[in-house]
Length: 105
Image 1 (cartoon, rainbow, N blue to C red):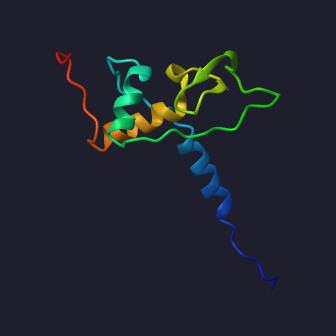
Image 2: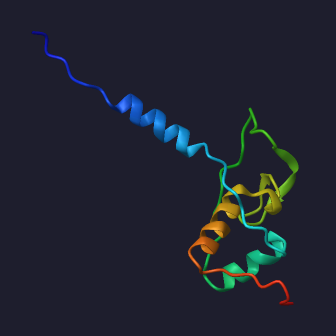
């Protein structure tokens, strides 16, 4: 009888890839990320994260005229289009650390 092993890694990896591609739904916030960043920094909820300077071929959506304050001013995207910051803010909302009130100025 040949010595065979069952390889379940392939199926597990396919399932993990499928689950990882589920689009996240971000909570609508009524403030710009540019205005939110100083609050998050002052309350030690985030820290400026230096990003690598993008090299060609550039990622989809790359904008050579935009900089991201969350990524230390790196070129390529604006803070309003920063997916890393959006995920971080959503994580803080989901954990209950960050809440928004509609009638609060």
